Amino acid sequence: MYELEEKSYFNYLIIIAVLVAIFLFNRFWKAKKQKEFASAEMLNVLAPNRSIFKQYLKMAMLMLVFLMMIIALVNPKVGSKLKTVKRAGVDIVFALDVSKSMLAEDVAPNRLMKSKQIISKVIDELGGDRIGIIAYAGKSYPLLPITTDYAAAKMMLKNADTDMIPSQGTAIASAIEMTNQYFDDEDQQNRILVIISDGEDHEAEALSSAEMAKSKGIKIYSIGVGTTSGGPIPIKQNGNVVGYKKDKNGDVVVTQLDKTVLMEVAQLTEGKYIDSKDTRHLVSELTDVLKGMDKKEFETQVFADYEDQFQWFVGLAVLFLILDVFFLERKTKWVEKLGLFEDKIVK
Image (cartoon, rainbow, N blue to C red; front, side, top):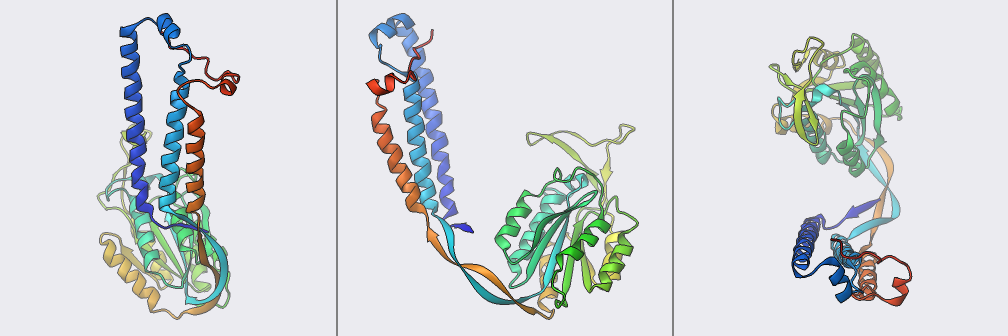
């Protein structure tokens, strides 16, 4: 396990981008002025040992020095010792809808991003609870097994998108059935499944799956994301909207929030349906429910000690500086034999 102590220093990466832009502009300006001064053949006579490639190599070395120093300032830390601690909590599984309809932007920034934000905020409020994440569309996919590693949960959540499951739809029944594989502790009395979806394209089997979940002590809390007025499903390329999803008749598809099944599966398992309009109220209500439940004590291993790793990056920065000393403007004999700098100024 690792952690980054000072992530704010990553903002300094903009310095590298600025320096590279200045260097490229300077190269372009020099090339233009050299053409005005003399022909390529004459420049080769006047400066036979000049190497354009070497200038780029030196620039790359300096940028690597900057990069290593920035990473050193961030100070990555690696967990070096595990210890066993006792925690008390409930088991919570989040079932995240990743169907294409979740790309609709009737809620900002879109339904999927809104759902991920909700899960992340709930995780921030948890204590000793164990969590798992399921992604589903036309079928379900185990994204994260039951764990107390909240950092890993957020990382996996960040990577969830609508392309991870090819088959489309909203297979709520499949997600509920997969939940049974997550609750591996028979003594855990409080088991919570949180379904986050727009409820569209649901299967008829959802209610029967909810009945089975109830028999195993699983309570379902469902969260509806989207609006009843709905919105189109954007098609994007390189982050830009190039069109909207259409049906077989060529009409733009408008996807709407369908609360019906979400409310029914929650009610059937003695859980609750919660609307996502007010995120703060939603998170507060859900965490209050979790805090009011009986907790089961269990043992888990966590990293107790983290060792600084900045010194390795400082060492690499020094190494690149030393190497840069040997890549001077004038060719050196041993480098010349490698044939790397045969380039001449091109007309």
